[in-house]
Length: 360
Image (cartoon, rainbow, N blue to C red; front, side, top):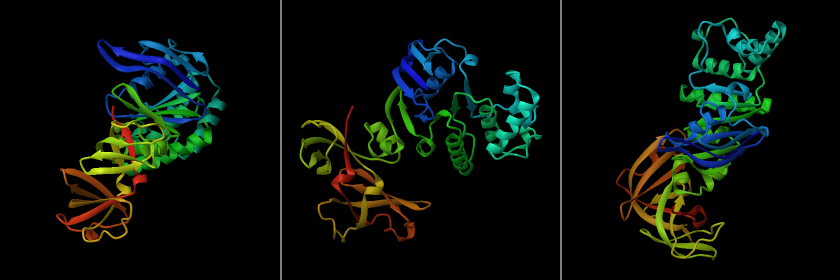
């Protein structure tokens, strides 16, 4: 559906987007994810035709649209601020792009009625935007985009103005519409939960470059860089140097001593400087006097600094020797059942839960 070949964008001496090759398949939901200034909105605006590329070509359905005006690209766009016309009713807001395309009155009424049913707002056609909640306005904005059957829908942080609960509901709603319609969607967000819950693939960006393109599961479980590991979820990163490689485990010398990690999918040379990634949910915490059952697991004693309840999980912060902090996440626990801050605890994890990431 979309193909970019060596597309870049400069603003004077600033490289907002380094040259990249990137494609989106027909019917796919892809999210551009990254912090502010990472280049994700620049990339979306290049595809939308809001700004021209400094180099490269942009294709939609095999047609070169690099220099085509936005109106000629056949794309739909949904904005964070909804961009609804306040003096128009919901019906007229949705009907507007159809009237621009000079469709007949009966066809316009049929399409608007159908799309309001689709977004589960069948009874609000006569209301003005100010009479709607934020979630309803966002659905109307989606309906106005869907009603003229664009080949591609671009979403520019569409849920950023909503509260957490409503944002989660709208994530499910957009996923439902995507599955129902089969329209290709390209979404921009800085919210990692939104990206992981909605996307078929995620394009993680940083400082104008692509760090990794992967499925949500791959991005969380097999990040390729320390930035990817730390940006997606919570990461315990332990710096070290490879001592042995090629066997059942990779042996790494760290400030915590010699640690073993899972074998990497690509060769890791001896002497390589690496980070070891251990996710908080893979770390087990027990009282310091109880080290039974550790077996061949990596085991370290430390001091519990704090415990934070996050709904169904509790996150513990433990200080290990060498002033290293490890985060532990326990499912279904309570803060009251955890040891008190200052208590000595034992942490352990399996070598298979420790992943090697080469440092840049």
